Image 1 (tube, chains in turn yellow, purple):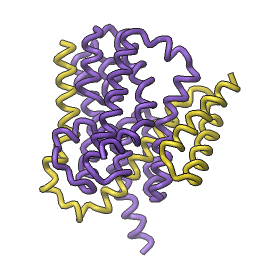
Image 2 (cartoon, chains in turn cyan, green):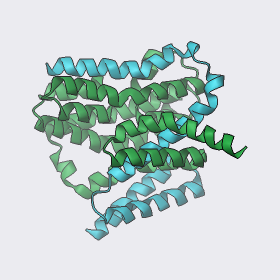
Image 3 (cartoon, chains in turn yellow, brown):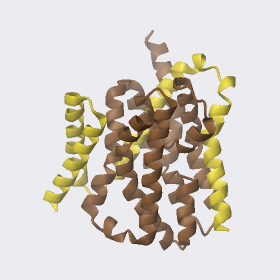
Length: 101
Length: 209
């Protein structure tokens, strides 16, 4: 039964990712350009909110997260390097949490 | 270009690994057998859907339907990627289009870049699950390390927002998402925010003109 459930979910997940590619010729992207652009920003923003808020287990986590995001921002504004910004944020989060523990 | 995708995907892998370890441990604790847990990560490759599946595994109908509903947001991802990138091998590209791969796909304009992102993300996800199944409790028992690695996700999305600069869409999307999160529907909130926000933005611009 477990294998059947896994296979069904796997096929359905794959189809939700694949169908838009197969049906792209039937979608007028020029007409939907502004919609999709705004939609993609909103989705990324939602992903940020859910991942950030979801990580807050205790009140003390919020300032740790905010300070780490500040470092991410400053690093990104200085070097414009995505990987470097994220890794500096992870390190900041790690060291602050370590210090608070 | 695949190599560039792999390099850009390192932050995704850093975030995926501890979450996958947790999935492996949690699914075992829910009574799934080792082979099925790894099979789920290999075939589904969708974090929230897999956690929902493992949580509901005792209720087959819910365990099948809820993960599928959670993944409906991927329909929008494919539409957006199709608009930006010429996709020649949709059957391959579609498989790895997770939330994080989709978000980072904006950093490249080639299908192979997406393959690179998906490849390193997939390796981290499956490897993390195997580690979880084999006894990853040591890794996730270090809470500071675990949570620091998982911080890679909000950091990644935040940097993408910084370089995007469509603040109105970002703000409305965040607001909608927060509301639905407060009501207990975080994954559905992502889908609703992606569908709802463009209409609000359009209404605001129509009102101001």
